[in-house]
Image (cartoon, rainbow, N blue to C red; front, side):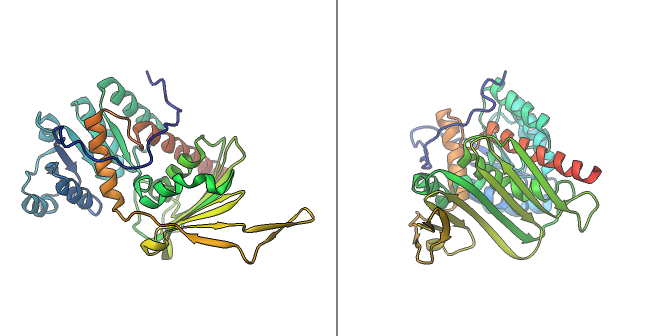
Length: 344
């Protein structure tokens, strides 16, 4: 039984170190593609990479040689008793079935986003992880970015939150099985839910299917929360420039997390952006903007370290299966909104 399905966990904001006195988990990575190669590198550098797997042997062979680890088939990987954890970086539609096999085999599991392409599959994985007493973690990497960690620590500077908006834009890569919201917006949904600490009561999505019928390549998602907070996300595969920006508006200040900026400029807070005259708000032309100093670290290294530490300590991950389920539920509601708009 899932008894904590919709609870938001309070966790330490800083990424913990590995316990040097405990054995390091032995990790296998499924998927040696554009993102899988980064996971392979990180787990190798952390000293825990024990095997890799990819249906395309030509992709796996160079990593096997470079990191001196075997290439295993899926079947042998899941049944190998020496492997403690499986990291899944395959195609999105394979995430849920591969994670199910790994959990049933008694492995801890890290799944890249999206966790699953349906709420039913996401719930099944959460139930299975609980029954097997195994760690289930989702790769919502921006939760492990030093800028976002620092932002959460400074959230009280903003005052009560009023509105959040995010732009996640690029040119391609075009997905065949999932639309742009499942591919890109899941990042910002995860961050917004972490800041809101509640689920939205309203989810509305609009999208444009320029390249393939019924599959939006550009979409806007609007969220409304019980507290009165609102948010919107613009996600697109059809932007000639790349943008990765999160803006958080509070009563007292506005914070901007811009991951395309140089490290020293990724996080800024603007105070006193409004002045009130006779009960009417006006933009303050002299508002103060401060660049926030953040520790420099690779978010993926933080994320991989957190996964290993959770296995060692038996702790719930920051981006647990339940967190992934909440993101999946919002995406499913967005999909329903798109369907309703098409049929009306």
